[in-house]
Image (cartoon, rainbow, N blue to C red):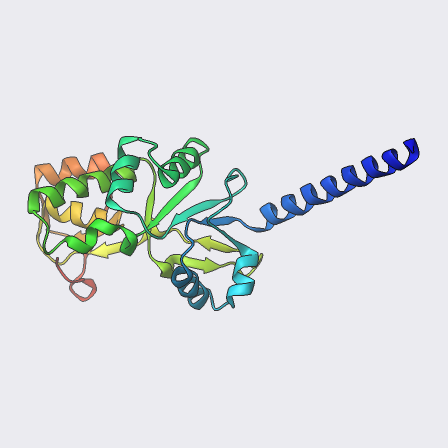
Length: 232
């Protein structure tokens, strides 16, 4: 009887060890946590990475796993107005806010889809002052190191076969206008640009100069006529 109990105990310990090793293997393989249960989002990601959803789920962990310590990046495809405001204010109101707070405390890369910020859909109809206030909360997210990305910035590593987020903030925007204002820089910054090319004789207003220092923007002068982009 004692031998039977001993065998049962050893068997249970071996099974628990195997489960722990299996879980550790999964965590080691899946480097990105995509915070969504939406099948539509999974299909978009599948199409972008050109992977069947079954293979995609072998590489990316979707919403449902709380242990985020071993992930390189956390991606939030959709963020409601309330969630954005709570995160900006450091309020852990729900699961999403708590996840982001923990990720930031652990020093993890946190990304949000530009098109997934709910408030942006109301730009045309929203009260201008209220919309500008929400833009301020979005700016606060960038102060926390949260990046705004597009699906196009999610790549598949040729070496490891694992997805990764490209360095979206290195994108440059060329301004053709001669007057560089604070509002122009703010609009570009909120779109994810931190490197901005301007004409050699462009005039940067004092408020714009302060904004450049505050956001640590990189300004490149000497933009030639043939290189100019469209002015906002």
